[in-house]
Image 1 (cartoon, rainbow, N blue to C red):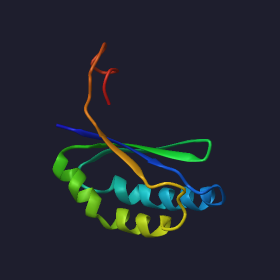
Image 2 (cartoon, helix red, strand yellow):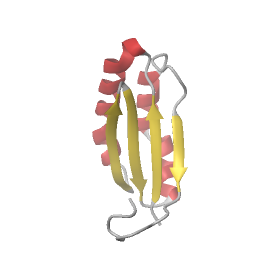
Image 3 (cartoon, rainbow, N blue to C red):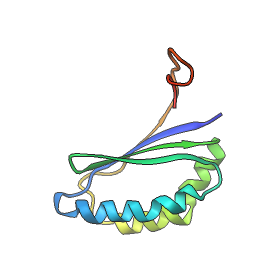
Image 4 (cartoon, rainbow, N blue to C red):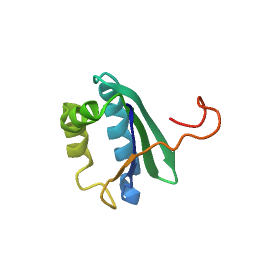
Length: 102
């Protein structure tokens, strides 16, 4: 069963560009990780939201210890206005099965 995660990353106002670049550098590495089904970056008003889907809880655990995430964490050190807000979601499918769940 796939696991969906939403991570909100809030940079300090003067660090938005640096945080964006750090995240963009990590994305291709994360895409290559086993079990990564979706790792999509979105931005609104200087806040970044990563929508993720992993093929299994094990794949998500592996991602949490992977080099790409370790490197990203180091690159973000001191640049965030708030702690990362990471939520693991449970799907509530509705309507068209192809459109009602990630």
